Image (tube, rainbow, N blue to C red):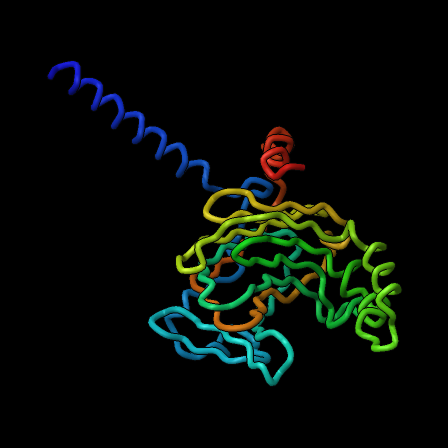
Length: 255
């Protein structure tokens, strides 16, 4: 009995210590957060007090915003907050409540070199995460025009896609679409890191990410609804630990 009790106590103690370490490690990896730039817990009923609301349907219910694409729009439902930033850490809670995916987007509406000033994004679905440099990738004006031109042949589209393949990176994930998850997006310089539930799940290094005058940040939802809550954004600088941790993080992502 005594040995059994000691063994049980040791197991409990280990679990407590392990749990404490896991919680302590659940923090930004690429960046060190600074001043809080924006937050919204959706405790209000009017999105327009903090967001520019675009296409789609929006409903705030019990402190959560439900975002749903309108099929007649032929475009994802989107809403964006307007404030200046460059390097940042963003955190938010999300639930894929029937939607195929959603994008966390970063834009500069004064930049004319890409469609609608799109700079970079992180797409999250139940089975994959994709990070994209929109500025020099799919939204670069000449690329976007070529890909949306009905006269562009399938062979020409393949060539365009091949020319920008290094402007995006895709990673497999396995998310329970029926549960809430915690997302984090970190941007410092030309690097972007995405984590879900405290675990890094995607990384991209690309020149467009380093765009100096970003001023819009928001979400675009494809298909049925995504639920979002507790959005926070901080200005950021490079973490002093990133270079020593980088190889381990990339190895965990298969890079």
